[in-house]
Image (cartoon, rainbow, N blue to C red):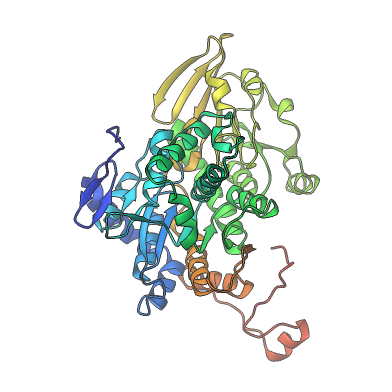
Length: 490
């Protein structure tokens, strides 16, 4: 794990990087080669567009888990001509051999597993710093975001600079913070401002758009748009069918228990597993745990999702009703304070608590560590045992962050091919329409969504039935698709 100063990155030829161990590059390259064979959609798009270089010279900054699968996405962007810089979007999700392989290939990457919050935000900022060849800095023209961290940093920096010009007294950057991470962001922005007073206004002048990967980041975008604060066009990749119904559902169905088992070696069969939230992620998690023989309980706020869970045969109740009998708790809501300190104190002894929602605030981690008399014992990295003064203990995985990436390697390559094919199409679309798109939030067209799915069928031996002209006319669709209206819910 890298613990050295974060003030300087390593220079390697024309590229700069900061990774845990560049010596892992060969191992990373071998795994990238394997992953490419399991990512037919993404590789097909790479092969289709690589000769024309439609992103030639475009500065693309990525803030997304630095995994083997992401390495294939990065190299697709490079193959399409882009100038890429990268950071991870989670302090525990980086696969160090993947980061090393990308750095060795000449792409500036700033990511390692086990970053502090200060290091994480330093890395995010570094990934935005494109050299202008004259000793100065340029910013990204496009952003690939996962959770909205890069988008937030630019918006908050821009807001701070405008407040400084207007001499606003109640500027966000000088306001009291609700969490330590907020203090870290504010300190970074002030440091950047001291060195480059117009840095973020300069970035915004050339910023042309962002494509957002995940539910939480999309919620942030819609909130900013409703408040009139969104600065650029944004493509909501998360709600493409081939992302939300595949990454969120089928990806979690495989990667959740992978993370739990690698962390704890626990026998899932016979245990009571509590899944908080029954959206696409919750559906995948519940199916995953039931598939291994767990007795699954679901908690929900939405009557439609609750009814869905009940119709699938799950018990649906409140988290309070499960305390004392639940063995495994999984949060997947995208909301805050789902599992509170009071909940954890009342849990069954040796209960396992983890999160597969995007951020670490679904579980009250800061309040947990502040409990008077609590004892924390680290069993191994990302597996912590907390013993309360009353004597009962719980195990918290990945410090309340994504368990599938903190304790395992995330989703399989095949399902990530769907997500990253969408990301690639989104970046192409943003750049192609950079002069016509207005500020707003866009979806990838249904026809392209279907095409992403189509690109994956041959790999798994699927043969499609073809509509006759008469059949197509009867249901009012083109023979070649798209086959569903935008309002259709898969």
